Image (tube, rainbow, N blue to C red; front, side, top):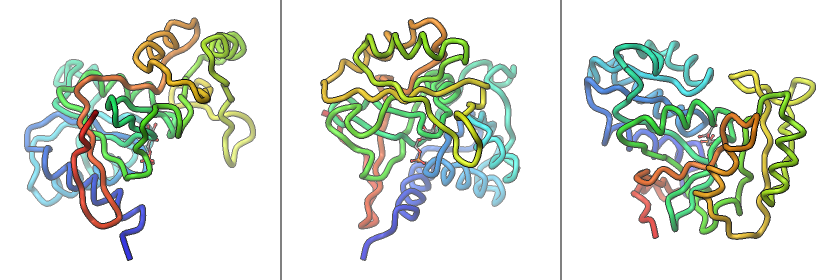
Length: 239
Ligand code: 5RP
């Protein structure tokens, strides 16, 4: 019997933290059920004295709360000792296109801060289990788009004009839509069967008025690590 999905997520996240996080680094803390294991591993390293002089920037309320609980020193990207740039970020993803290394993120609604932090880091390490790997971006997961509330209908029409089928993300255990950490709404855009140009789409979606950010991450040098139920972890070969 192999490992269950939680164990696999923990294994891949911890393996990558141990490989790449060193004392003195400025690190971004990802969001979600995989990235949280990386946050906890960094927290344990600090508590045990293996990691010193770490400064962290969180990508959501979730990672902020966990970092505070663990005593990880938190800053914002604007703080003078961060000055808008991190050494590295470790985060999960909802879908990884193994042909290009492009990602869909934002299943947890944290895409705007995640992209801000991850496009301003020297290295981005993505940690996933096998279920996230695909050969066509958008085939496994819709693209989350954060829109300001006033733009909801107009942005939905513009996303339809780009060939997508937007769906307002609804909250659970709260009436009405999901409200993001930034006070906005999320449209989950189903792309259908077309083989989209993800790099083009990332830019095109962001030029719709009222769109704050979208969950396509086409950063070129992303390093992707996969954990498998047989207990192995390896870097995904892109191509
Ligand atoms: C949050 C994200 C997460 O990284 C993504 O949703 C993956 O989460 P999980 O590891 O729980 O599957 O982008 O906005």
